[in-house]
Image 1: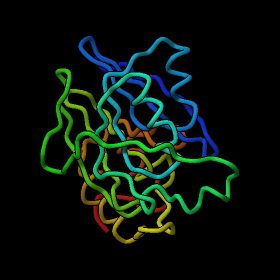
Image 2: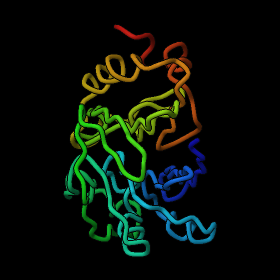
Image 3: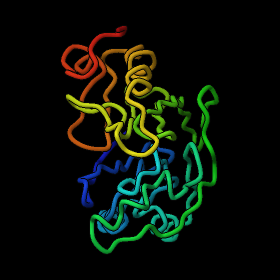
Length: 207
């Protein structure tokens, strides 16, 4: 059974998810403040999973790596373009501490650690490196900023593509079971079925 707690932090109110089973634990995304929160709760992650590299999802990535010496899984190594480093100045004095991705994930190749296996969906459009993590035997999708309750990720940022994002949601996420919970980078949890019925940006499984 997968137990999940979440933390919301940083200028964009970004969600990070602390997850554990009887065998292992992991953190999905690293918003600002999540490292201190993990320490305050006594949670020790065995791995860090990054849905994409936008700065609000990785500001604490280096701290998480340093404090717990854990591997990081993501679709791509961070670059200034992927982290949107040029935008940081608009939000005051903040900087992304350098971090490295230890294991690059790829759609169609299962990812495994600590007795857990994940299916990977690559769904660009919000960011070129956006992925969705689907843990085996758990009706959950860690989707970052691809699909959210009543919304979708922005496509007007560098590397964004609105048509590609909608195509990926329809052809990949909306083909999943309706009861799968979508844990997004912002906002409250939802389900695939609820978004297929109600999402004003993209409804149904096909255009």
